[in-house]
Image 1 (cartoon, one colour):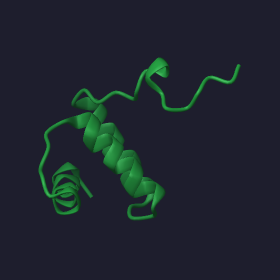
Image 2 (cartoon, one colour; image 1 turned 90 degrees about the vertical axis):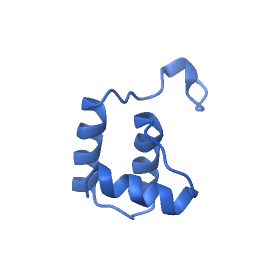
Image 3 (tube, one colour; image 1 turned 135 degrees about the vertical axis):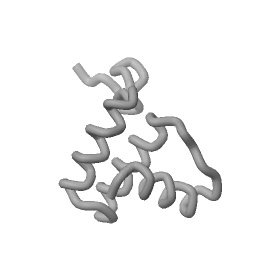
Image 4 (cartoon, one colour; image 1 turned 60 degrees about the horizontal axis):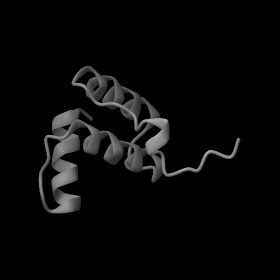
Length: 68
């Protein structure tokens, strides 16, 4: 799977398209968690998306509370 395939899958799932690499990164993560793509595909997509500027959410923006 490449980014073009991911964008197509995103469009069919969400009924709109996006060029936002962070939204695509989140979508790829969801697809991996739900066993819709393999770890190999996920890693490839993450590398491609990061090369286009995608970033993981900052720690202070995380939905998981800091329990330290």
